[in-house]
Each structure stands twice: as C-alpha cells, then as structure tokens.
Image (cartoon, rainbow, N blue to C red; front, side, top):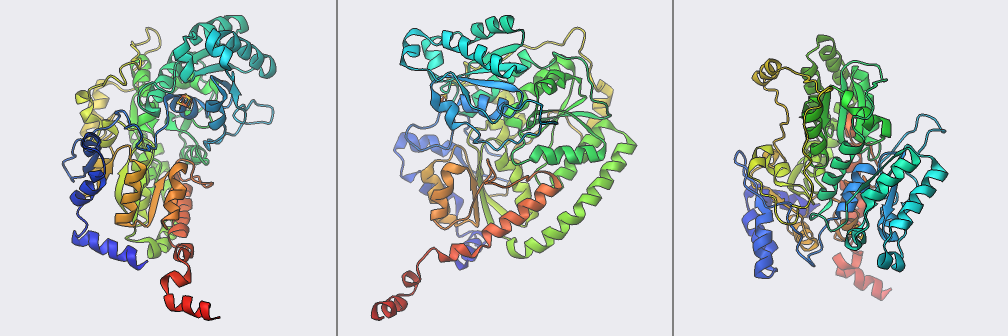
Length: 549
Ligand code: SF4
C-alpha cells in the first residue's frame, strides 16, 4: 500500500517521466524492433493528439496479446447468435479452443427456441483432407448439421489451411443453400488474413451484410424509436441491461449486433431508424453500409459508465427529438442514479486516486476509463490489441490512413442506395439543425482525446512491456485478458479481465456500473495482496525466532 501511495506521489511530482519509461520499455529490443515499437508507444498530449502506429503486423516472437481473423469473425461477431449453426471448417483446434470461451449470454424466449451456442461444430479436417481437399467433408458436415438441428442458417468459417489448400467454401455454401432451402454462407476468415482479429470483424461485417441484413422487410416488433445496438456482444449480460434501460425509456431495440441475437433480427435490422455503436472497431463497417444502402444514420454511444449511459440515452433522445421521450429519459436517469450515487460515494472513500492500466481489444480500453473515473481512479496507461488509428486518434484521421500490404486483401464492399428501400431518416436540413446544436453523426473522437497529459498509450503491448509497466508504476489494478492474468497477479497486482469479466457482469448501464464499482473496490482493497511475501521474508528476526523454535 505504501508503495502505491509513493508511486502516485512520484507521478504527481513528475518524478516518473513517461519519456524515460518509454526509453526503458524499448531499450531491451534489437534496433529494428525498438524503432517499430517506438511508433506504437506514444505519450499522450492533451488537446493535441499525437500519431500512433496501429493495425500493423505483430513482431514475431514478442508475445503479443493478439488473436487471428477467425477469432474476430467467428468468435466475436457471429458467435453470439443463437440460431445459426456456426461451422468451423478446419482441424479441430480452432473450434475447440473457441468453444464457449467468450461469455456471450443468450436468452431464448422459450425452451423450444433453438440455441446452438453451447455446441462446437467442426469439420475436424484430417491429413487426407489437406492432401485431397476438404470440400466433400464440408458438404457432408453441412448436411449432417441440417439433418440433426434444422437451423435457420448455417455459416461456415475458414481456418488457416482452408485458404492454403484452395477449398472453395463459398461455392459449397451456395450449392448447399440451393439443396437445403435454408441460408448457407461462408466466410474466408483464415487466421493469417490481416494482422489480428480486426480483419475477421471486417470479413464478418461484409458477410452478414451481404447474406442476411435486409432479407425480411416485415417489422413485427411494435414500438416507437426503433434502434439497433451495434457492437454489443452481451458479455456477462451487458446487452440485457442495455435493453432493460432502453425499454424503460420507451426506446425499441430492433437488433443487437450480435449479443443475444437471432437470424431474424439481422434480417430485419434495416427497418430500424438509428444505429447506435458501442464497439466502433468491430462493427463500424455494417453501420456505414446500412447508411449507404438504407439511409439509417449512425451515432457513437457508450453504455459503460453510469454517466456515459446517461449521456448516450440523452443523445438517442435528441436524435428522435420527441418531448415525451426526452422527459422519460430524464426520469429514468434520475431514478437509476440514486443507487449509483449511493454506491459511488461509499467506494470512493477507498478507491479515490488509485491507478489503473487497461490493455484490451479494440474498444474497452477506452470505455472502461469512464467507469474508473467515476470511482475517482486514474488511468495512467492504456492501449488496444487490434484497434486502428481512428479508434485511438478519432475518425478525423481516416482519410490519412494508408492500408498496408497485410490488410489489402480484406474486401471493401461497394454499396449503393437500395432503389426501393433507401429512405433517409433525417433530411439535410434536420442534420444541419442538429449539427448547430452540437449533435454530429459518425462522430468518434477516439480514446486518446479523453486521456490525460503524460499518460502512455501502447498499441499491441508485449508481455515484456506489460511486466516492465507494472514494475515501474505499480498500478492498483491492471485490466487485460486471461493470458495476462496470472503473470500479473503473481507480481502482486490485482488483475481484472475485461474480456470475460472473470465470472462477473453485467458492467454496462446503471446496474452494471454498481456491479463494477463493488467488484473493483473488493479487488484493489483485498488483504490478499499483503500476504504475497512470507512473514520471514519481510522480517528476518521472525525467521530467526522460527529457527530457534
Ligand atoms: S490462427 Fe489459424 S489455426 Fe490458429 S485459431 Fe486462427 S484460424 Fe485457427
């Protein structure tokens, strides 16, 4: 504890100079590696966001946190949909290791409704399939899955060897679609595409947009203020909490991409009047394409943090510009904040001023800073595994981003307005009017604009850098994933998983904020961290006493 307080004081005095820390982090690397990492480790400046290198190839052997395109496509975007059969085409590893390891929750309305999320479907390719091709086995697997489960749709996910041996998964899917009379489509999301999960998100967005969105023009769900929640994957029940709050305000959730989602939700998503984006990285492509084809505008929102949730609800109300909705939103916020403020006041006594570090995926390292700020905690360093420059620096840098050779093979779909169904939800005058009031569409200013001067922003952090950072700063809490968790805890630093939430959640919305405050308070103030050293390591006299006895 004393060490933590000293570190804080040192930071405030400027005794820990981030420029020196950056030099220390890269000093151990060979020159070429150090040069590359130097561009991915930047010292944040308030009011003038510096450029960061992101979405570039990971350095071989550096122990990256990253996963692959298959993980981004099958694991992240399509995995949380309960009534698709998600079939992995490849050897057994990819499907097995991604089987139920993301905590996407789902809630079928009745026990009879399909839910395939608990299964792991794989073609389990063997040596002879690599030699002679796996298309025959894929056809048979699709047929078998159909015969047993009669799903609404089957999607096929390619793993590394599939692209190398030249299996035409798209043609097999087309054939089987005609044969079975259900929607069957495939993704070329081989693990080596792009440089991280990010390529898989893009491939998934393209596929779901091309094959499912807009297939059903009926909008059976009654209700005003129809909104899609994009990039919300219902980890630990986050989407349930968001839907609860939206519905309490009188806002109608149409589709969630893709927490607790179904095939029909995607097929009818184009009937909504607004797309609200939680995770910008994984889903902005679908939002852009839905706007071009159907005229649905998108806005960035954030339901992580009670204040951010309130701000997001107000933003949605402003978009619909309806007095009744605006009043209702204020009522709901006032009601929900009572409990939030009560718990906040209590935990702040124990958490105020403590330091946090966040190195997670492509959006949470930003969103969760709001929750820590509400607890009075300071984010001293943060970064993403696979975000792009626009997630760090804001969308204003988009025109200047050059797509490098590693990402050039990810298809950009050409999308045009639908001749019959394109309907702009806001006129040019309304958009101008909203802009005059400070309301902008497609507006995301990125993580760095919100971070304090002198904080370290690190893209694709390595294991070595992780360990150096915790030795130097001794943060009160470090947030990352399962691979980092135990190495960090062994160094005596509380570690919160912000992918799986450990076993907790929800952390979104108002109830989620309360859960998070309580959980972090429990972790950072636990006595367990003071027991890491045996008594005789800190007090040699005691050792001598034991020896005498
Ligand atoms: S990198 Fe290739 S083999 Fe590994 S999980 Fe991804 S798709 Fe499977």
